[in-house]
Every structure is written in structure tokens, then in C-alpha cells.
Image 1 (spheres, rainbow, N blue to C red):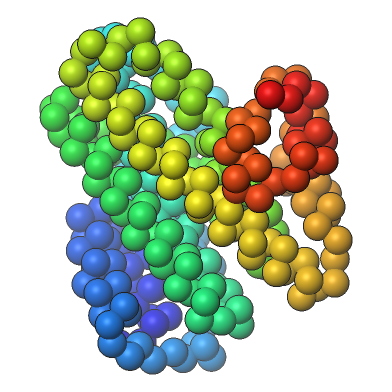
Image 2 (image 1 turned 90 degrees about the vertical axis):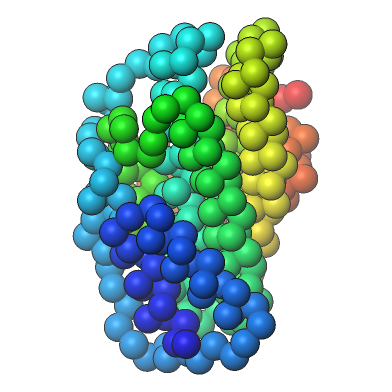
Length: 270
């Protein structure tokens, strides 16, 4: 099995079921058998996200406002948005291995492990959607994460933007969602959603930490000070910092952020 052609096939799979089936088969072989590598093969720049065949993609401004979380429809909308993030995260992890071919086997091992985690997260959330009579693709989605991948075609920017900015934002957002769900946790489905979100939060700290590590490796390789992070984020997401709201300091420190960075990210600390 050749690594990069197999990843391209997985990345362009026409359905979520096909993608996950292909990934599981590939990953089992990757872990226990020799996989060849042809780093000279063409690296595609994908023009569409892999979900464009079964999801309606719309502008983020057109996303319908979520209904109250106490009702089934609001729970489905929440779960659908999480499923979309997790499905996109599968592709982001795979794309990093597919695209950055000169970083080494350790990089490949780490991001394929992340992809495996994201598959598990997606299946967990998809299962809850199915319990509520829904499915991934029922609601329109935006392609912000896909656009972020297209706009970051070198290792330094990819690690800064995807794990260290966008995924790190999730470390801040997830506890806020849980806090809104807590008063409703006597509802059995709400209790399941809270448990799933806690699993995702705990493991996403590790994912952001991996991104932090490889961002710093890229800085060393390019002989650039890690403070370039703020320039990169300002370029892609102007006026992101400093924020007037607090961040999840404990999670971000565990994921590799320094106290000085947190002071630059948010005006309000823990």
C-alpha cells in the first residue's frame, strides 16, 4: 500500500461511510505492516471539500440560528454542527500527512493518530444524531475549515492556523456549550451530549498540543521566532487578538500556550 495515493483516495471519498471504511482499513495496515511512500507523486490542491457531495455548503452568515437546546431540534442542530467540525477535522489531519511530505515519519504517526481520534469523535456524534432521527448532511454547513486548509499550504502556517488557532478556539467554546447544557442534563440526550463533549475536549487538548509542537518545529526549521504566530493569525483572521473575553487558560496551557501568549490573546485571563 502506497501512503500518499491511499490518503488521496480517502480524502476524496464520496461519502462519510466510505471515507471511514477506507481509513480504518488503511490505518490497520499502516500500524502493523510496511507502507511504501512515493513522495514525488503529484500533490493535489483540492477545489472542493470532501463533503460537498452530500452536504449543502452555504455562507457562514446564512447558517440558521440554533433553536433552544432543551428541544430535540436544537439538540440536532448542535450535534450537526459538531459532527461537521469533527468530519472536517478528519480531512485536516489526513491532509497534513498527505501534503507535508518532508517532515518525517513521526509527524505522519502523530497526525494519523489524530485522524483516528477524529473518526471516533465523528462516529460518536453521528450516533447521537441517529438516536434523534437525524443524520450528517441534514442541515447546510459552511466550509470555513476547508478554506483554512486551502489558505495554509506550508507547515508553519498550517500548524499555526488549524490546531493552534481554530482548534484552540474550540477549547474555549466547548466549556461554554457544556455550561448551557448543564441545567438540562436530566434530559437523557443532553446528558449524552455533555459526556461526548467532555471526551472531545479532553482529546482536543492533545491535538492542539501536537499542533503546538509541530508549529515550533517549523519555526526552528525556518529560523523564525514563535511570535510569528500572531502575525500569521492577523494575516488570515484580522483583529482576532486581543479578545475582550476570557479563554480556557488551563486547557491552553496544557496544549502548549505560554502565559505571555495568553496575555496577548485575551484581555481577560482566568
